Image (cartoon, rainbow, N blue to C red):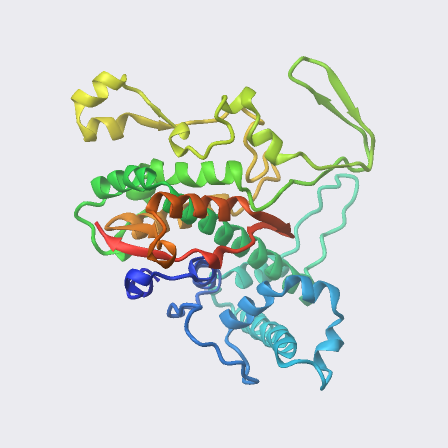
Length: 398
C-alpha cells in the first residue's frame, strides 16, 4: 500500500480511506482465514464481472453494502432487471456463503479423519460446535446444542464486520489527523526509528519485542478513538432482573428489568472533568506520562526519555472505546496490534502531507481543510467522514 501511495508522486492519492479498507480486509483475510492477497488500490480500475469473486472481494462488496443487504430481501438480487451494480451484491453474497460452506465442509472432514484443524476462525467455530459444553444452569443436566450452519455463517459475518469496518475507519481518521498535525508525525516517527533503527524488513518485526515499546503509536489510536469512535454507543441490557448502579457520589440508580442502556461515548470521552480543559482537542501526547521532569528529559537523551514514558491508564469508566467488563470487545488487542504495525510501517521512513488545491492553497490552509473534512462526519451504522476522497495525500521520504 505504501509503495502504491508513493508511486502517485506530488499529486498524491485521494483514495486513502478506501485503500485502508483494503488493507484492513487483507489483514483480516490472512489472520482469520489464512488467505493472502496482493494489495490493489481502489484508484485502479475495477470491472464488474459475473465471474465468482474471491473470498476477499466478495466480503469487500458485502461490507460496502451492509445497509442494502439488511433492507432488500435476498431473492430480490436474482431479478433479471436489476442494475448490474446491485446484482453484483447478490453475486458477492452467494459467493461468500459458498466460500464459507466449503471451508466448513473441509473442517468437518478433518474432524471426521481425526486430523488437526486449520487454525482459522471457521475452524475454531466448527470445532467448538462439535464439542458441546455443559450449560451454566446448575439445575439442569442439559448440554448446549452445536451451532447450526446458519449460526456459524452469522458469527463469521459478525466477526468480519466488527473486525474490519471499525479498524479501517479508525485508521482513516488517524491518518487524516496525522496529515493535519505534522508535529505528531515527527513525535511517533522518533519512537519508531529509535526502536526499529536496524529492522528495515517489517516481516521480521516481532510482536513480543516491538509492540509494547511503540506506546506513542498506540496513543494515536487511543486519542483517535476518544474523539472519533466508529461506534457511537455501547448498548447494554439489564436482562430479566433489575440492576443497581452505584454512582461516584455513592448514590444508587435502580434500572428496571428488560431495559436497554446506551452510554453516550462522545460525552464521556470529552468530559472536561476527566480529560481536562482541552478535552475537545486531538492531542495523543495526553496518553503518555513521562517519569522524568522536562529538564531531566532534555539532559537524559532520547533513550532514557522513551524508556521512562508510560501509557496512561484512564480512571475506570472514563474510556470505554472497546466497551468494558466481562463482555468487552474480543478483538481489542488484535485492532491495537494491527494499528500500531500500520503506523510503524507508514511513518518509519516517510511523512504524509496534504496536496494544496490548485497549487495556490498554503500548507497551513490545506491542513485546516483536512481537519474540516475530519469534523464533517456522520453515522451510517458507524461513524465515518462524509468526503474523505476530497483530500489528496502525498507521501515523502524523510
